[in-house]
Image 1: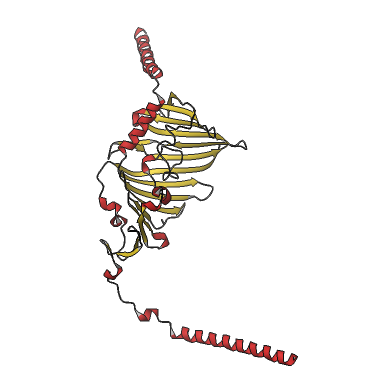
Image 2: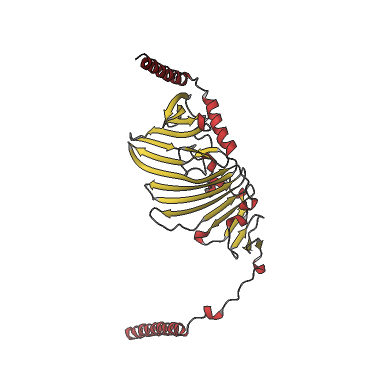
Length: 355
């Protein structure tokens, strides 16, 4: 009995000693916590490759699936996107876009137009205009992937238009997290952000609570379970669940699954040139990077003038109209002419009779 009491007392002491430090852990400064979160993500995901599957499972407009392959470094990015409706087996044609500090290359094969090359100075925000996603910010806002072409690192953290934020220790799905709470000064939305210090000070969940003028309560939430990826050894979302609820009912749900992610490794520079688009020989390209549009053709290795590309001469038999079609057209035109003259003759006869 004495030994049993000793064991029980020891377990109680261990439990108390384990809980008390956690409860007494000093609260970090909000600004310091936010800066650690921002710095970890930006410094460790400067370059890499991300392949992700996006499923709009519940959407008031259209239920779709998208597949993104994004290769990027600090200044350049290449995005390949495919789409299909939920339930379809066949993916649509790939849409490929490259953005560099000087030019962008837009290859939208699904509309069968020439590849467009133009200076980025044509647009104030080329990535935003071309809807090229920034994978660095995945899970750090409330938009899922829908706003990654527009988002920045201060969508949730370090905002200037908020009430003084508070921070407290919180447990979320078995993880020790720091929760930051504040309200936006504009619409009064209540924002909650959970940061996991043991996983790169990464955002693992975020919520926004708002009340509409008609009294409806909206809750927008993003859950981002993290994974430490082997290439780069970086904590990055494994999955992102984005939900929008109105008065407790889910009206929108998006699931983002990271199929592959690599960070920090070398990237072939050709990935950000026409070579990286995997164009078929003979594909037409309109190059406007010099200020004037020039028609060029891809010969499989480089851009050349159309005259330099060998093409098969046109087959006149292929474009010649069949004999029966020519006779049919001639007969139809003859009938139309005969009807026109007959009608004109009737009108002239009627007018003479009336006179």
